[in-house]
Amino acid sequence: MKNRLRELRAGHAWSQGDLAEKLGVSRQTVNAIETEKYDPSLPLALKIARLFKQSVEEIFSSRGD
Amino acid sequence: MNSSVPSVSPDASNSSCGLGRRAWLPPTLWGVGAGLTAGAATMVFAMTRLPLAVRLLVAVLPLIPSLGYIGCIVSMLRRVDELQRRIQLEAIGFAFAATVIVVMLVDLLQQARITPSIHWGWSGLWAAMAVLWGLGNVIASRRYR
Image (cartoon, rainbow over the protein chains, first blue to last red):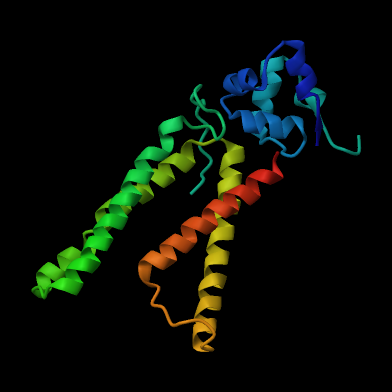
């Protein structure tokens, strides 16, 4: 899946470590999501959406979209 | 080993896998304890003749640190985040299958008298699985970089 996580993180001037801490995951996980090597689980995707005050669909989209 | 338990906030000192730097210490200590007690038991059996009850006790003594090791590993795998849990699942699956293949290959080579006949025992099997688990970790981790 494609995502806007890096863009949203940069908008808050957070490092990957900062974002990882806020989400309760490792920096490796944040990096893997941003590089689209890993798709987060639904709970984590919802947590990300809540953190950035956007819907899951606004942050994540399938590659065909 | 990985269950659907909410991830715990990673220790700020090391977020490479969602655990603190010292998270690997308890299972390492239990593992070393299991190895040492098992090694000691092997030496005791080789050097002395003991009554049946004592032999049984010495033989099962390594179970105590071994169970501690298992408990630590399971606990740790429940605490890591979802990506690390996936990586460990892939690594453990690889290690299990690869260990079976390695043991089979070594045994066949010994039967064919291509390699010397060596009694592996528990130590060889444990070492092979540990190394292959580490290799599995490296392979699985690289997929998500």
